Length: 171
Ligand SMILES: [Zn+2]
Image (cartoon, rainbow, N blue to C red; front, top):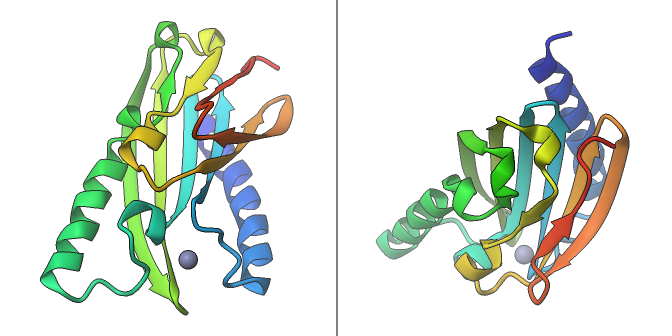
């Protein structure tokens, strides 16, 4: 199976599991808390971010006024620049290839969803990931990170006051 397809399947299984769990608890997202799923397979790194609207633009209704629309547009641009939000070990040479960002408002809450693909020149040198994300979005307090590699999956609660994780991508 082509590698990107393999990754996509892994990630969609993972996200589907989360989505069905979320469906039962529509209003369960916690303001200040975002979720980030990361799948690493050789040179390819795929990431999915879910962030409450409250954390990113300070509201969770449909963007109807010109001001709200401008805020959402600016936030999407900031979220699309993933390499300014999530920083891998420099020696790994990870370069952002794609970004897709959506804003979805429903039932009194709203979230930003983003999907990214990075390619790394030396993926075996990925040792850590830091999160300038918290500087860009001051209302965000925690990222619940799920890392998926060929070795399995591992969860990290990354807090604003300690914005980084260390891992061995070859495991
Ligand atoms: Zn909310």
